[in-house]
Image (cartoon, each protein chain N blue to C red):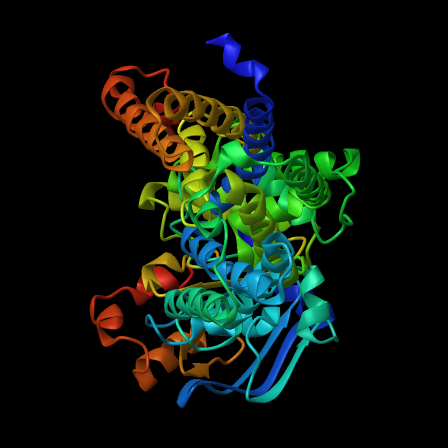
Length: 264
Length: 281
C-alpha cells in the first residue's frame, strides 16, 4: 500500500503541477537574516519534509508561503498567485501552541473556524459547513470527540483536530509546523498513515527539528538552516546533509539516517 | 428589606446594575478568554482623559468619555500590534498618558469639578434616567456587534494567526473588540467607577469560565453573576452605609475566592466536575 503509493507518485511526477514556488527569497528580521536566497518548488501529491535546527527559519518559511511574513527580496507563488490570495488553497496546521486548556471552545467549533473564509460576517455556519466539519473529523478519526472541549484532549488528539480544521476548505496544500512535537512515538505511525492518505489529494509540507520524526512516508527531504539545501529528492539530500553539515551534526552521528531512507 | 424598592433612586440603581451586568458579562468573557485584561485596564483608566475633556469643554463628561475611550482603545490596539514596542510597555505608557491628560484638563477647567469622584469610584445611587438611557443604548450596540461577529470573535480569541490565514480581518475585529471594551467602561462607570471597572470585566467571566466550556453559557452565567454581585453589593452598602462601587467589587472578589476554593479543593475530589474531565487516548 505504502510502496505502491510511492511508485504511483513517482510515475506521475512529470504530470504533477507545481503548487508552491519560491525564487531567491530572503527574509530579514531587523538586521538578522533568517532566510537566505531560498529556492523551492513543491508539486502536487508530494510529501516534503523540511528539517533543520530550531531557529533555522522553518516556521518563517511556512509563514512566507502563507503571506504572514513578507520577504525582503524574492518572489513567492502559491498556485500561480501571490501568497495572500493563494492561502485560500492552503491548509495550515500551526506549531502546537500552548493555548489555554480551559478555553471555552469545542472540537466542532475549532474545526468550524476553518470555514470562516467562506462564510460572511453575520452569516451563521450552515449545513454545508457542518457537513465539511463532519467529513474532516471522520478523516482524522475524531468524530466522537466533536462536542468535547479541545483543551481536554491529549496532545495527539488536539493535533488531529487542528489537521481537521485545516482540511475543511479542501486545500491543495497542507503545511504542518512541528506536528509531531505533541505526539508520542508509538502513535506517530498512525499519524503518518493519515498523512499518507491525505497526500493523494494535496501536497504536504512538514517542517520539524527532529530528524527522527521524518519517517519513510516522506517523499523528499530538504534541509534548512538559513539556507535551504534541496535537490528535489529524498536520497541525495541525505548525502547533501552529511556533506554540508549545516544540520546539527549529532543527528547524523547518532546513526539516524537509516531511518530516513526508505527500505528497499 | 423590600421597602427600599419604593425609592426611585433604588429602582434606578437596580436597573443600572442590570444594564451594567449585560455589558460586563458579555464583553468581560472576551477580556478573560483573549487575555486582554491589561489592555482593558489601560482603556478604562485612559478614559479618564475623556472625563477631563468633558469638564474642560463644559459638557457632560459622558460625551467626553465615549469618543476619548474609543480613540484610546484604537491607539492602544494599533500601537501594540503594529510597532515594535512591547505590548505591555505600550499599554502602560498610554494608560498613564490618558490619566495625565484628564488631570491636566480638569486643572485647566474653571472652578471646581463636581461629581469627579462619582466618575472615578462610581455613584450608583445618583444614576439618572438619562444615564440609564445611555447605558441601554450602549448595551444594545454591544449586543448587536457581538451577535454579528460572534464566530469571528471566537476564532480571533482562540487562534488569531489561524483566523488571519483563513481570511478573517483579525486586526480590524480586534480593534472593534477594544472599542466594545471602551463602551463597556462607559456603561460600568456609574456603577463602580472607571478605577474599578476592570473588576467587573474580569471577575464574573473568570468565575463562569470555571464552570462551563461553552462561550454562550459563559456569557449568560457572567451576566447573572454580575447582577447578583451588584444587587448584593448594593444591599450591603445600603445597610452598612458603605461606598457602593467598592462594596460591589469586594462582593465580587469574595465570590471569586469562594468559587476558586470550591473548584480547587472540593471539586478536585469529584470526577464529574467540569474542570476535572480528561479524555483518554
